[in-house]
Amino acid sequence: MSKQSPFSFLDGLMERIVSGPQPPAWLVHEVQHRAVLFLNHVLMQEREAMDRLARQAGRTAHVQWRNFFMTLQLTPAGLLDLAPEGAQPDLRLQVFEASPLSLARSALAGERPSIRIEGDVQLAADINWVVDNVRWDVEDDLARVIGDAPARAVASVAERVAAALRRFVGARMGGAGDLGAHGADNSTAHRSPP
Image (cartoon, rainbow, N blue to C red; front, side):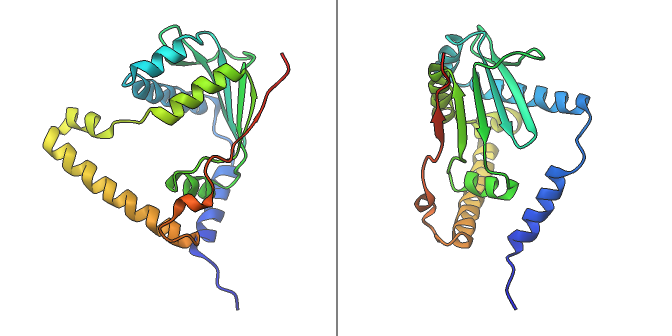
C-alpha cells in the first residue's frame, strides 16, 4: 500500500477550484483592479522603481497563468493601469507551472516559476529589476494602523511563522533547510523579432 502525501489532496482541491467555472467578467475586472491598486501601493514605496517604469510609459505587458491573465499598461507616473481591451502587448509573460500548490511551494522557497518571456527586452529588464528589488513593507503599512511597537511585534511573529513554513515545505520537498538547492532562476527568455 503506497502512502499518499497530504499535499496531493490539497493539490487536487486547488486544481478543482482553479479549473472550476469561470467567474463573471465583472468580478474578474474588480479583482484585476484591486491587484493593480495593491501593486501601485507597493511601487510608490520605491521611487527608483517608478522612475524605471516611467521610462516605459504607454508600454503594455500581458501576464498569464493558466486561464488567468491581466494586461497592464505603464503610466507616465511609473505606475500600472489595466490596459484597454484589445491592446497589443509589448511583452508577454506566461507562467508555466500549472499546479497552484507547486507555485505556492516555489514562492515559499524563494524560487521563481518557469516563465516564458516574449517581446521587448528593455521592458522585460525593467520589470525584472522591479521584481528583484521592490518589496512590500508590511510593517510600515501596519504601523500606520496600529502603531510602531505593535507592528514590529506582528512583523516579528510573521517572520518566524514564514521561516517555520519554509523549513516545513523544504523538509517535505526533500531539501530540509536547503531550499536554494532546488534551482534559482529557471525562467526562459525568448525575444520576438522586431
